[in-house]
Image (cartoon, rainbow over all chains, first blue to last red; front, top):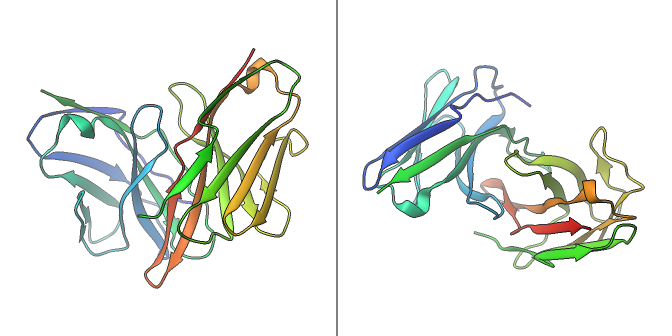
Length: 111
Length: 117
């Protein structure tokens, strides 16, 4: 699996947009970009995933660069409940491929 | 999204005993489930891939005789920690992959916190 690089921590003011970057320069053609988050002492929660087009759902937006070597997860209006560790993972989107977690970004939303 | 449950949510046991953790996919069938372990302030580490009707595939360094995995149905996988010791105390998390026409997504259970005294 391709590896990802994320900043270890970030702060964001409540109500503002939180932009979380991820580098995945060795991503291969069949690998998707997945984002999960983990709130303290809970299992990871799926947020969004994409291949090369930008994606949006009720939780967040995913912006993938044209060369697919990096992406940004955007939480449009961060709330205190968005405080969590956010993981960016690349993996093929078929069959039973496992997800390999890196260290993630600890996002703290500040009141 | 799909729901994955785990039971129990937390367990405390004496050293030397065995503990069974259940992982269920509640609204979909999963031919494959995954077991992770997470130590405090660390990331999730994959322990093994559980395949329905066949033997589990263990990651390097994970003792298959200590962490027994059984995936007897399309909605249930169990992890048994045998002869548990204090160093086995950890947060154990399972996940299941749901395949749809749009590809597949992996959903995680809420985790089981094991404390071995």
